[in-house]
Length: 489
Image (cartoon, rainbow, N blue to C red; front, side, top):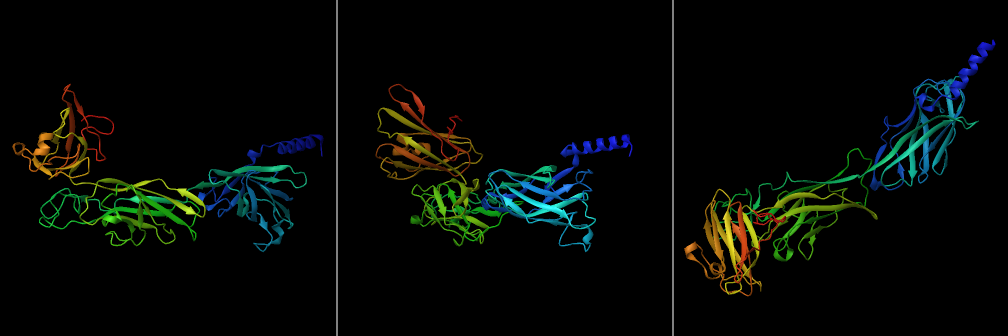
């Protein structure tokens, strides 16, 4: 061989030795991509991957493609993670036992050596024509790791190396495992009683706010009206599911713990004949999925635990005795998934709220007529397009109701101003029926308008200075003249 040829060959070999690894088109994928296998955080810290780790060599290089001598495969993971086990399997390299009945192209893989965060296999040719061809040359299957963090992504590195010199032939990184919540909790209001409202109307045979009207309209229920009211409310469903695209399955002993936040006192307390429960029946016929216990404040109903292996959906039901007044309230579902000692909280979700089919406003402070230092006024406005009956319930500082409720008709667009004398002694000239009489201390009131968009202002005038103060505070219905942000309507 001439000096020129020898020098050219030497240069070519040198160029190959110093070829950047990235130029060799060697990459690692899991099931054809670099996103990694998404595994539920609830699956714990020891994971066996179902996705295959693929070793791909698509470029042409003297260091890899066309190689006929042995090489090693080294898998590295973060130092906090341990490689427990894995198997190496055929790709374009035909491993013994022979899969294509041609022993001439066979390679033999040693048993894997697993040490800490590394696994190593030695691959040697056993057939006369054994050659590395382009494509997915090998696969790592059933990779089991321990110490996997419950959040974030585990990145692995695969190296092909010369077993004699330990020189790395090719190297690439891959996302092996990423984490996500394996269980989802959602609320569906579409399959609840979307039209049903607490009926504020009254007639001689039915008190206001004790039953639901199925269609939501005023004057639709009551024994002397058009039909019968209902004492149950289906607020929609809660649905438990495995997060799509996440490796996860329920196990025996897994539990779903749910609670419902709202205003359940007094109508839905067991002592008053009410109940809050989960049911398979959209008509809330039975608490066949979970009953609940309501806290002393009447604001949280905690359901008995649910087995997600059995239950995937349930209707949120509230029932009353048909005689105890029901209050409007938003309803929020909270919960968690529990496996052993591990607890994963769900984001909260809303089911249908309890709503009146008219206007209900609470006034918390109103001076009696005998107060010589200050006088209170009540301004009731109908901002709606239809007139209707207004009923005022009064309760003194001792919790005693007034002698009778006060009622009057308020036409659309009009306002009626009442003072302490009007409320305690009555005022037929203003169209009032009924009066509170004398009470203990100050009054608090509940005003019910059998129409939409009633606004109420509670005003106090200092008899010495003549200063008028708005005492109206906001209630949860957003119908007060002064809302929660201090905005005066």
